[in-house]
Length: 177
Image (cartoon, rainbow, N blue to C red; front, side):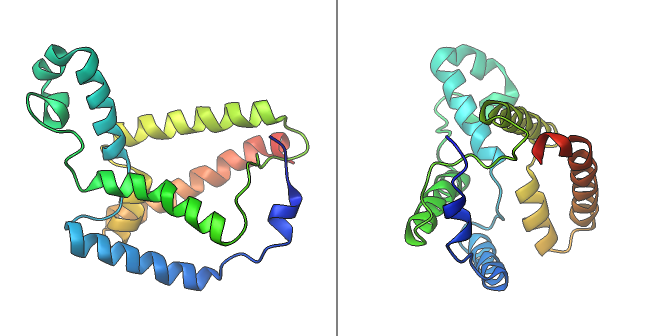
């Protein structure tokens, strides 16, 4: 994969205010339909519990944490969060296809190889996933859902999250541009 600048320069991006309103509508509908906000890490945990149950169901049954997701006759995919985590990539695909932006590209700067960019992305994803499970929730669940109900913890987290992100970006900026 390589950078395809045509994809990023010739097509108009969505209006951010329109996208913001649409995201608010989606969040409202998530609360209205499921009685839960948006999030993803719980769905990933259910998938992991299901895989673990396939390999060693007796381990899942003995582990109280995993048993809540897939123990005994519990169906790990019988949860509101499963349609959400399926809908996110499906919605992204449809959006990219409709806007004629569907392309396999790796966004990277001139001073980083595609392979190294993917390694950084994988490492970042692993750290974020581990942190989400350690915190018992993901950034989207806390920021969007917690922020929407004016949770002080959500706003404090987002300030710390962005401050940490900007500090890390400053440290790794030479690998990007």
